[in-house]
Length: 204
Image (tube, rainbow, N blue to C red; front, top):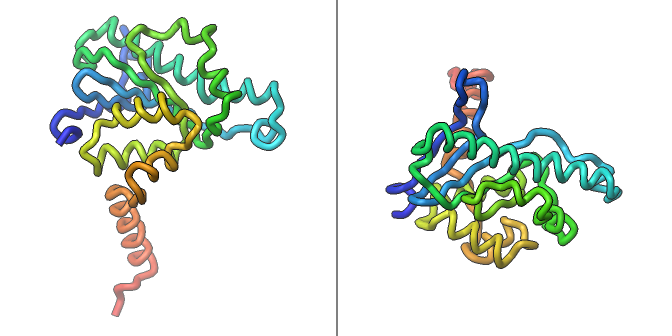
């Protein structure tokens, strides 16, 4: 079992001389590979989504994609400089920028993503990066929880070979139906139990 035996999850933590800095939202290490998840709240403006205005599109893409990737990159570089063994010496780093609403995978956006003007500042260990939405990150969680598959192999193949295909579509063509996460089922059961207690359904 690839994931359960060797996978390490690191939650957000404080770092720096006075612990005033915050790391990225989550880190997942599998042997020599490290996945960094950087989340960004907020909604893409209608001028971007509906009108495809060039100015707002570039501004929103920077806000929800390139800046979060660079933020994750900066935190990673500072952390390994201060704590070299924090991530187990992982040398292959993947960064995912996650937003509430995802930009579609279109040539226009991918040109912005691969613009050398900002990519040149990435740490040499950063091998792949991508942008996705909340529903896509659930697919990542589903793979880790349910499949005996390296999440890094999945990401590498998806990013390199199917960059314009949504994560959900790519997963479906390879593995079929995406079932509900066990954690979601547990949460739903908890919510239903609370509703029943609130409405006193168990009262005879």
